[in-house]
Image (cartoon, rainbow, N blue to C red):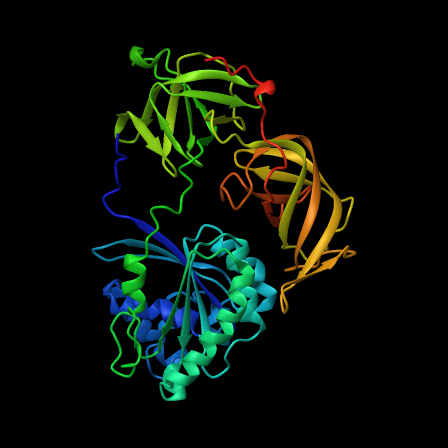
Length: 439
């Protein structure tokens, strides 16, 4: 049975790069030229022109909403904008370029299908370009666009464009994660090759930026090979007037991977109990099948003991289950991460206690090399650590499944999110000996 398709796809993407590379201006230009602004938004831009635009409309103000951002001409916080064309819907995250706000960039890019890394054609490739490209690779973003901006300030030089392209292509193989890479020469300020093709680049035969965003293939980005369903809520409707729902018991959540069908056998972890799928409910009613990343309610034939934090999985491509975990983390707190510290770990729909048992390495983003056994990880550092959790977690490697392979660390006492993490592939998966596989 063929999978049903959404009527229109949603592409999530982020912009990143160094300070003043034109990230906010690019998003403003996309919204403005694609006719996705309301009249009141245009009027607000015109009113702010004399304050921040020198009498001209400043498109960056569409995303730089904080007063400090407009006064300094920089992006501090992550701003989300939504727009659509006849071909696709878009959710875009405008992320900061400053090194001190690297954690904000990680937050904005964590759910992206595609990342746009801007490079100032005058400055070329700098450390922050490499840093954000590495983070995009670390987060498993499969598609990347290198937008060489401000080409008008280098007289639309093809040689300069090719020079930047060659330098970036020299280190991309070391990252070995991007499914496709596109290089596009643009001028975000003037709109060249953003929504409309520029007359100044006859030497460039590729698509403009919006054309690429509308056509990049993202249907295969989700893992459809291994069913994963973290249970978020046990759904028991309490409606005394509707007796048809009196015995209803469903498991609600978002499918994190794979496909589920009526009649399919599933395994509940960590208990190891098995059952069959009796029904699948969505907003549109009962369905014969569902797939990642849909949010559904699954009813089982057996009333087995399942609660929030448990996970339903298929009988193929089983996940790992362990309390000794290996992961990469981006540290987000002003207090450094040190060995022996205890935190809460939030993974899918469950929370447990965790202790950092070792700091294995810290990544030097200027060279992509690892420094072994660092004494600590400071804010915005990226490193490899080992964790010991209070109970075994059911997980996949981040490169296999971005949803079941990611987690955050939370500081005890303050409940501050202090790190975003990505699990390494499990050294061993759930074994047939652990559960009754007779079905």
